[in-house]
Length: 255
Image 1: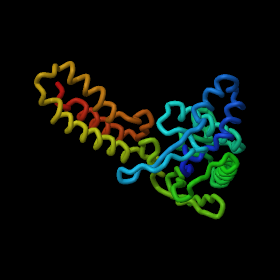
Image 2 (image 1 turned 30 degrees about the vertical axis):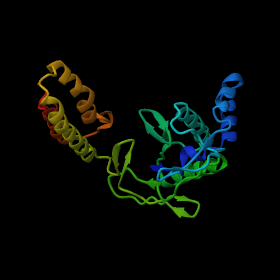
Image 3 (image 1 turned 135 degrees about the horizontal axis):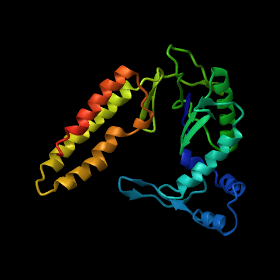
């Protein structure tokens, strides 16, 4: 696995290339002109210690905070991903998956070091062509295996660091593929939330039991079960962690 970090992802997107990508994906006519109008004469300024600078034109990058920006960025990155294909990924449930893309969080997957290096090289080349750049200091590699295997990946002359664990989209991945540490972390986070809710919600007697249960389900349960769909455990660890989760779930003080 290679966790790829892009330098200043949203701020580096060349708009001229973005318009070409949108047309390539069938966005034309009034729709693309409307999108382009959002970026015409766009300006920005800098505030330091309460003082504002003169405004200056911004000719590159996506608008921060705009609800359309994630869609534009996903489309832009999808084209890079498609053009960098050429190596088969890892098989999951009968399907070959070579990459995971969520906004600017990118993971490349391959069955061997050689294939992963080839895939990374293609991806880095397409990024450069599209005006993007991989941050070699923040990108890392990891091998999912029972025993430690060296995986040296390069972007240009830079060697990416190899790690034993990596947090992706809030979930801790380890090289051994074990989930005990991630579950412990989730239980710890849920326990902290439970303590806060006990101090701020349970003590409020004016709240009905139904209201307290609703708050419990909307906050505490979501924290406790975040990412549980990918928890993979042995029988012994399954029973152990299942008991811990159920105890936390049942004794929250909301009954």
